[in-house]
Image 1 (cartoon, rainbow, N blue to C red):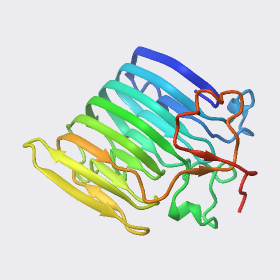
Image 2: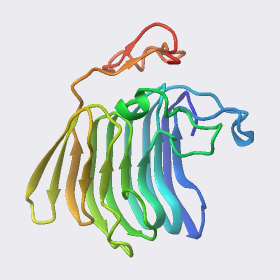
Image 3: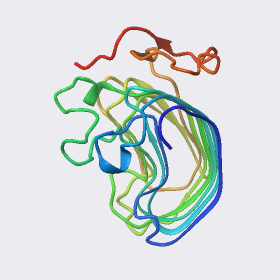
Length: 240
């Protein structure tokens, strides 16, 4: 799913072993448009997306939320079941794509201090087998607000893969409620990271950062949808 997509519904997708060998569902507000497979796509805001029922024996990643210069808002997903060799939920900002197609350069300040905006995301009923060694089953390297995962159950083949790895973001707070109902609070500052060990969690919630999201691009053809979103729009793209 590329930019300028709103009010979408995706349900009951099933993949056999090794299928798909990529993101099962990719919600990409930004992407490298010079890649051959992306020539007919555009970058832009994405919002109001509902996903129900993603099942795969062995996919690459179940859900990707990609935001760098445009926001992804109001995404609800439920029922991510099966095995993945990379991520259950991936918000890496496309930092690790092939050289020449990355959306953020290492020389940019926002590579380490926070980029993108993902807001109003709730993912429920995540039962996954981690079939590969990764930085985190849920990888968050994008600025988020009101980001919630409920009902996370992990059957890891590689216990070294954390349940959550959060870094390269603006300051935020992570509240993790384990299977016994104990709530742990983690605060991330301008630097550092938050790592949750591989385990079952009733709820993982990432609270808003201490800064307001600001974006250089206007709302395009969807001003009415964005009226109630707490995002500021002004000016021209910041190419730093």
